[in-house]
Length: 250
Length: 297
View 1 (tube, one colour):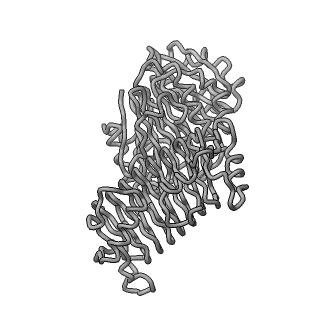
View 2 (view 1 turned 180 degrees about the vertical axis):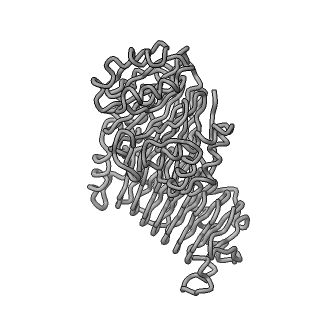
View 3 (view 1 turned 45 degrees about the vertical axis):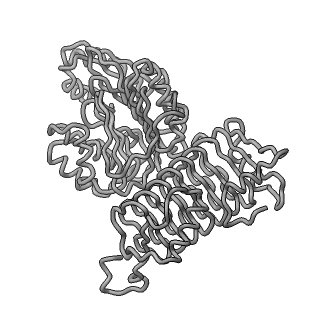
């Protein structure tokens, strides 16, 4: 098994699909969401059932929430709220779009959304990699605490609000109030930023940032885009401690 | 929470299925709001105008009302009862007179809405019970909106259910809560508008009716909500020939739209859209905050 962090989907998917190892298929038109999630939770460490396929999700909530084994789950269609929430080591691919809160509080592993993601993608995430191949809506990466998020398209307003650590990479544009009240997360945006939130500023892109960003782009399977095309944003660190002169900014 | 849906048909061949499609959409969002549900259907135009009425005691209130009303307004009247609701049909020129006469003849009857084409059905209960009660699945039409309610701002009653209608063929469903509705209500009352409830959504509906009465089109009226209404909202609005959507600038109330050559559809969640024909190839998107979307026939 690959380690639960810092791998790319390509390798794991390949590992999960070695000859002779059929995917375990759950058709949500026939079976309940509870059966799917219970089966995923019942996986013992080291289980050989590493490839899972979920059919007809039809916007269901909480698909593959709480996965804690390094398995690959392909979801064939669009999902509702909280897909892959609390993921700890799973590799979840949504072949469609995701509703609000995809990958919320992810611990480790990887989630790839082939379509768009709704509000608060990756909210409060502590680790792992969330890749949105389309656009993400408002509040992407809100209160992120260590997760890495790569969005191929644009992100909506109030993204990375109170973001504490981790990296948010946006190949397109960012909406209003990016990084409002941000702590130590790093934000990399290639396109236009509509406006920056309180205490969020543009920062110098030093060699270590270019290296970090290139690594994230590689892990997210992004090609044809150079790290040097991005601008870095982060905290001005003026709101960490209460200062009466900053009262307007809180 | 609350769940809202809307469906605006472009393809006439789907019109016989409007009620069935909208019912399925609303039922799929039942767990967003168990308190009450309602639906407004825009049917085919005819030579008569319609008033949808409601009574807690339909047998007592609807019996003989057609004859009494015809006599009072001096025009032919027909009444088709469906459970607690009934649709009163009469000459369009007599519609205001008929409204007043109904209130005089049967003070306990509540008017759900009126217009050339709209019919509104709403009751306490789950969406499935409400659509079954009123036979919504069998209804045909060009467009419609629906709502399933988790009450926050006012009591769980039939009148507190959505859609709210405050003008001819106009109605609105709302997910969210408004914080300046008392102030806006006072201003609208000063303009001469009347209110049936303490509900915030009724104020939004009346605001739009007032704007349109001042000559604005649906799109312009919706634009006004962004500056004049404070609070959380995703609104879906129907007019005689139009359908519109707007979300407040914070946009925390969910919304998904889908469009094909056959229809434009709205749902609080994608779940509501999954049974629509051709959804797998539809353009599906999340409506932008503070952006007005509207379609007209």
